[in-house]
Amino acid sequence: MANPTKYQPPEVLSFGQAWENEKAAMALLLPILAPGGMEPVRSDGRSRRERAREMQERMGKFSAIYNAGWFVRDSYFGADARQHDAVMRLVAVLLQELRTTQDRVACMYALVDALSCGKHGLPWEAS
Image 1: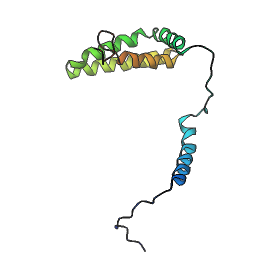
Image 2: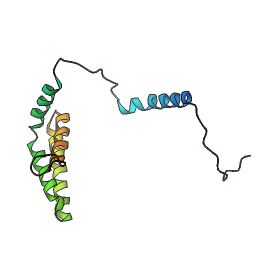
Image 3: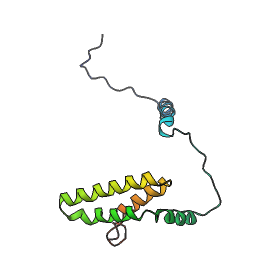
Image 4: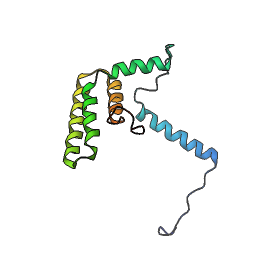
């Protein structure tokens, strides 16, 4: 019988064994990560720039999120209570928008866009 307190080195796997283990793990995770199954990528002939412009138009409907995001960014150097209030206001606005919209993807993109801009509308790196 092996001593349970003695160190046991991990089993060394060959590349093929590791690959098979990874494929088995992904087969278990895929139904969890993509419950509806993986949909094929659809190509409708539009350019990336055109699709990005359409997404920006859809994101423009969420001005309340942009406004609340501005208050979060503006409160960054303020007191902790002000930061907390601004974040809680943003969360409340986000929940309200998610309840009322059918375009949740554009809503999430608007949230990320609102939080990734500086005070002057530029990304943090450029401000």
